[in-house]
Image 1: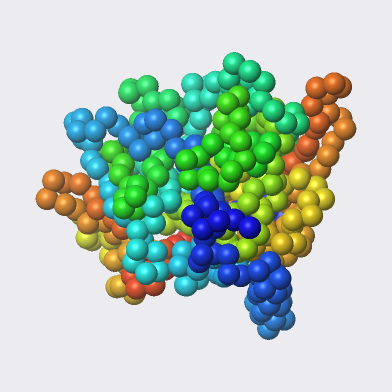
Image 2: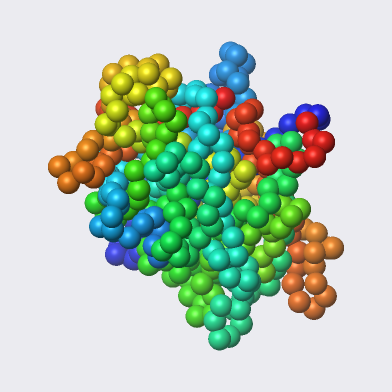
Length: 184
Length: 269
């Protein structure tokens, strides 16, 4: 096959993505508080630990059986099919919140939610993962997590709240900086 | 002179002149070239750590990204369909009762992966300023007029050739407060999904020959001229419609990991 084509560079989403990207129902992959629904929430923070009020998170995940959803309709949800994709802008306190289902995984593998961060001031997308905290054996065996120092690993694993929800902060820079990913 | 309290009079931001800012850009590019000379790989995209774009200073990671083998979910992409995008959403000039002001344009091109395969049936989203360089967003306090007939957001799905097509208005240049007398080159924001989630990008398309390119710290955050050039559309007379709209062509190449998962496609290696 011929040489690979040079990629189109990314650029920041800038300050005005708010009327171009968010859409009604974007953060709600499932109806809040419906059976099986969990909240995934947290904050996006900058190098001073200050909230980033103009960031946007996208999540993409398997369904509870561990399959990649193939259903269309993430932009206009039909309430029947789980599409696996959601988009949430942060609010004035840098907070985001999704309602989704618990992702599944291959037997023995650690389930995670793939995530991309965009923000004003951030020149390009950042990929990361949000691992579920529950299966500690699978987390220890995970190829990515096991290659990280404990402090780095902690930035990729969500915290389970008393309500059974998932709390996860993203730190763009500095102490506790989230581990971001490039793919082989 | 702007009076104190004017939305464009921001005491913090207006202290740096364009001359000083341009010197900072040149110094950062020189630093990058020195790193390349020292063996660092050439960049294909922007430098995240690019202080001339002031908002990036506290918002760029300081560590290199961790290189990882993608899992299956990362090798596929969300699926979008006709349910997601209305047919009229690709025409930004018909979203209101009247015609928007400005130069009507058609922007079209193909979304391809790095082997040249079309990215089919995927979502393309755009947003932009109006002809006067004003965004409809509440945070935009640029005192250019809003256009009641122009919102500036559109969507479409790529076809079987990976092609997209929007009808819109040529956006104006946009003043911002990164430094004194800072202006962004006219641009349209593009959001693209590929065949894999790893290929996802958000970027900006520019127009050929813009005199603001050299001055803009966002465009110049990409240190390689050849990479910057890939964000610039070309005027295409074949796309131009007589007595109707000027045509601009812009193809987009999405790259992902070597292990990109392809839908089976006869005979292609």
